Image (tube, rainbow, N blue to C red):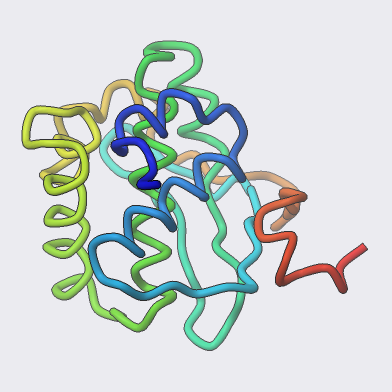
Length: 168
């Protein structure tokens, strides 16, 4: 039996691992590939009035790191963007993790997958098309904020439990 359409799956998702499951399903449907054994970390990566780093994936690693700063900002200003934004960042970094290493490869593919799975008018696709129009809701209006006290990382439990059971 086929799974529900992506918008319904995302609507039902509540936790970060559940949203990541929707990402993996969309990539599996669209590209017929998947990657297991990934972890998700959250950290304050900084940002400013005109820029932010949404997340990153280190080549040859197994962890996607998302910037907590925009997540808090979205909850304050546009909670309706919360799941679509998380989906977009996780999709982008997941596409990197399956071998599309450059932004020139990744961005068009993320837009293609988003449009195919959500339709051209869905906010997920709008974010993939260019999230600059959402910028006021993603960053704090403080120029050049960087986290104090160095880098800290919060690991999200339960992201890929079948492949990461060795982590306690």
